[in-house]
Image 1 (cartoon, helix red, strand yellow):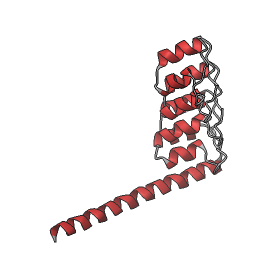
Image 2 (cartoon, rainbow, N blue to C red):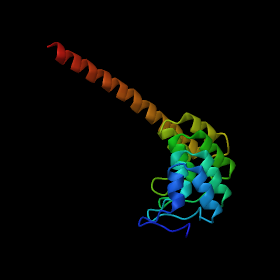
Image 3 (cartoon, helix red, strand yellow):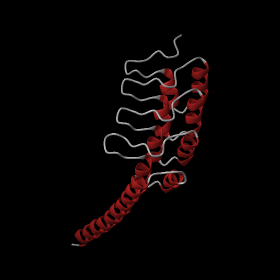
Image 4 (tube, rainbow, N blue to C red):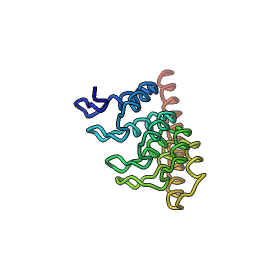
Length: 173
């Protein structure tokens, strides 16, 4: 059987093994010659799926099998950016240790992994990303993103308190 046979969406058995976090199946497929760099029709690679899942063990398997730590999706997103968004600090640390470019920026808005981690309120991922070399513009942008998240959370909390008081007053009348 062809281990790289793809379904209508271009996903292979390795894509599905990674998506479901099945390390044993991924190991068997990789040992059988599955391509860890193969993208689906939507551009998803096994590494991007592992990063979205924050699965450091799977990321390690794929990198050991030849996946490119700095591969990019259609809009320039890297596995490091995807992992940073989820806050999966072990995945972020592993990608950095394996050579991921912490200063890479996606092409849509110029967002970096640090900016994604800050914008999604993932302080552990932020710490992992700033532990190594990083450009100052990216650090300033991440600081602004984090301040914006904190402001929005405070505003939301205040709005929820207002709604709660309004509902309480409505129930009393």
